[in-house]
Image (cartoon, rainbow, N blue to C red):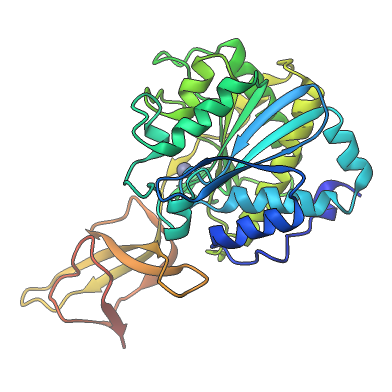
Length: 369
Ligand SMILES: [Zn+2]
């Protein structure tokens, strides 16, 4: 059996939300031989690194640098869960590589389900300023060892598709080192790995794999790490149809993580096959979560328009899963975009306390017959 047939999600973490406390206790109980604390967050939560493997190829990965992106933490837990069922596969992989995996680089943001850390800093734009506590620990980890590869693990919004129709369930990037976006040797190393992941997954999730924009971001983590000589691959988990808790994404993210590590163990810094990366379609920004079409407002003159709505993910106190709150993003002619859900309101009534749906506010209206 291959990895995707063996895939088993870790049953202790079935929600999209991962409580840092629960994760830390799980790591201490089940993986204490492999984890060490490498630092503390702004609010004094521990940041753990799990180290596994005896191989000569050194790989660094980190999850939840943005707190509201739990897919990669799940993927690492699921990878271990799955490989426990396939000892030979596990041995084969981890005899070639050594993986240092930092769980929840931003535990405060993970607790509150926010992109930013507790001091409202985006760790992924803090490379030079180092105004966040957490980015220093990541840079310190990089300074301690010469890594052959790094995996910068993220999630993206539901707005992205690969072709205007299919969601970008997974997107990858070999980040640019300069504004000219030159294809350097280190970028080719990343592209070769991504090309191999693409080969393994394109049949499993056809048309659902995209290439993230390679615009150079001077303050971002991946761009600076690759510029400083460490090949750094960006992963982005995205939308999966009818699956806002991203269980499907989580599965394919795990499979992608496995094939990334496998490709790294086989390529060992070779760039063979890098051109395949260029076959991957580029991400397009084409969708909203919901578009209400032909909404007739309660105005004196006839006014018919579209209302585009996007869910905001909110962690409510005392809950163990995030909530999805619809927000109005655009009102007017939204023909250039599509909705994952399209609702035709022709001949129906728009019922709300206000005449117009308010932008950037919760969608507090109903559509009635
Ligand atoms: Zn992110």
